[in-house]
Length: 152
Image 1 (cartoon, rainbow, N blue to C red):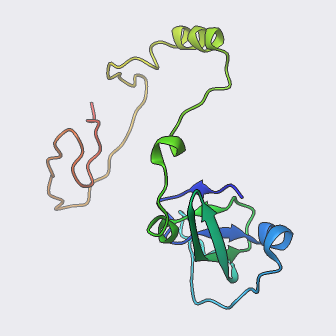
Image 2 (image 1 turned 180 degrees about the horizontal axis):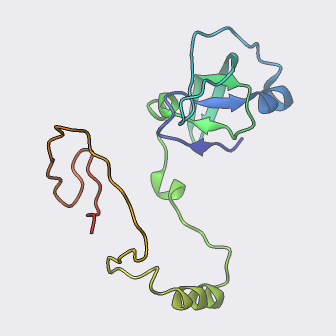
């Protein structure tokens, strides 16, 4: 089974449709796990299974939370701490676009793919600041909460 690696997910998750199709022979155990999606909405947790995971030469039994949603299976941090992954192969970028077409696309939109920091023009923004808020200096390079790009 293919899973999306999600370092934002505290646990590994399996949609109910995948459980019904591929893993219904494993007993669905009750769990007290509560999960929320990015926006804060609670997911309907159906239960948890113990899955035998085989990856390369590794074989381990790990918990997998079954949820009632239409997403894809997610490999969360609880599995990441137990499995040794080949990150070079996971982050390998492949293109299905033929090289000449890709180069033509990059050339056509070279201003978007330039290494030079650009400017947004013709856009008005209002930044609301809480009364009494203290300014914070964020050095470039992004330590902590600060992003790597300055506001211009």
